[in-house]
Length: 182
Image: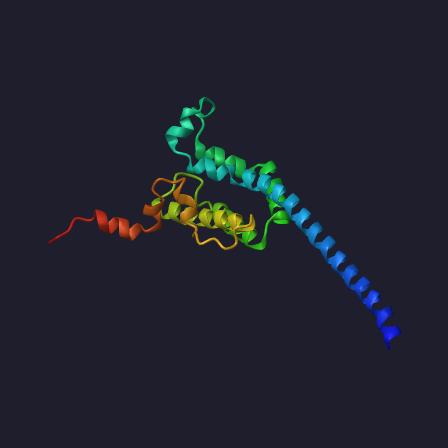
């Protein structure tokens, strides 16, 4: 029995060491791939977001750039979204993005395809697409490592859109502007 124990102990240690090494290699490879994927995602996300950044840029800021003085920002954003390059980037997103990012992007693009913001929109249209864009940004944030975020889709826009809270709660804002009949 002692002889068996003295032979079995190094074999068991060797097996456990091999299992641990294999697990470590897999984990390191997964981390390395995730880091490479993250770099690729950042580039794709930036390209995908470009037309939306244009749409949310104030008219004054848009016109202050000399190359944009004679260009309509809605037409420019629409042209970008319909371009071959943007479609290629969309394919990259479908391969690199998480399921939730792709679903949020699909919702946003379906809204676009329905023609809901090809021209300056009504406040209801703006509220809808801003909500979809905020959800897309939130899903991007989660896919970049902030899975436990407590922000919502509207909070993702507040830093960028000066009246985001007005669109978030249109009834509350309208009620506060309504004259009181006391």
